[in-house]
Each structure stands twice: as C-alpha cells, then as structure tokens.
Image (cartoon, rainbow, N blue to C red):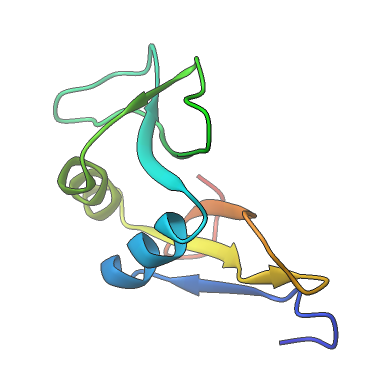
Length: 97
C-alpha cells in the first residue's frame, strides 16, 4: 500500500471479493437490460440504497458469470484512511471489462 493507502489490488478469490463488497454494504447485481441466462449480464455491486438501473442477483450467479468471463476484481481497500468502494471488473489479463 502507498503512503495514503490508495493502491489498487487485484483478486479472483471469491471469499475475498464477497467480504470486500459486503463490508461496504455491497450486493451482487447485474445491469438491467443486459442479456441474462447463460451470459449473466454486466456485473456490478449495488451499494446502500437499491440503484434503479441494477438488478440484484445471487452470489452463485455473480461468480458463475465472473468465472465464465475470466474476470478479476481490481479494488481499493482504503483511500485517505477511509474504506473505499472503488472497484473495476477486469479480464484476468488486465484489460477492463
């Protein structure tokens, strides 16, 4: 971590991802209107109040899509001493998703 704790980390560990999201009030979600079924839609986390453009999904569904697409979570633990909600889903080769 940098001096201010703003460095980003990357993980594919399901338990670590779930713990990170839930400790910030996050729930697994998909963007409404994106393909579902086998595709799973565009993955997101919904924090706090339910966001209108997101549809809550199960952790099982989230991680199935996460694995099917070969994704990783790029995230920050803290920024300037506060819990950070910054995250980005990226391909495991490092490209943004």
